[in-house]
View 1 (tube, one colour):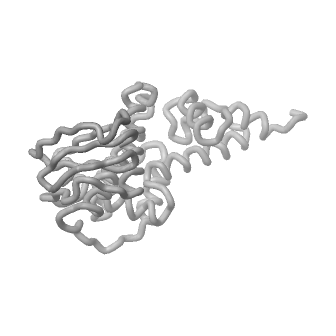
View 2: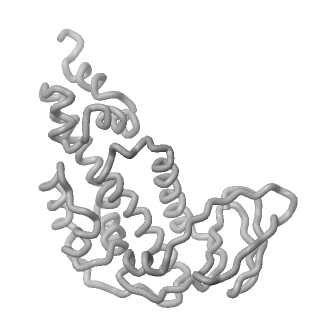
View 3: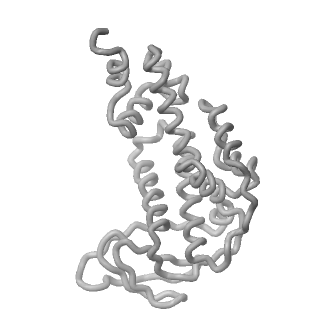
Length: 236
């Protein structure tokens, strides 16, 4: 819920949700609703199939026991997922494949796991925590052609959700968001060393110079050309 309030019935009890809260439903559950109060309501919705949830979490049969959630991690995971979806629909990030697809998959895995963590009918399976340094080194070794999230998870013996969650705890970011930062840092170093912008983009794993330019501006606040001029100094 992004605005206003929502009232409805569910098989798990009455639903009264306000902005900042998350309304859940299980497969086959009828859901309708009406505004809560006199303010207009606005919401965003996503449906995940049981099969997709099982694939992301490494186990099946999960149901959500609570119809309304107020958990900042769930809300943030849902907001991140929706942001990726909105960007995909705009068509502005299609050039980022396949890395963008893996980052999108990260948000879906994290959303699924957070929902089950907060409101699942049974806990997620516990796994021994392998060192995330192996995942990190694998990503760095394959900067230009990284493995998929599924490949990383299989190699680690984890579900995709477990991998994203544990890597985020260890390194502060999910695997492919972290990889994006490594690519940007390498591009910065190469440009500072005098390498041409296009060559620095390709060497760092970007699809082209315009891709590098967009991410420079988004993440750093300046263009690669501005960085190049700053590294040359005012007298060069």
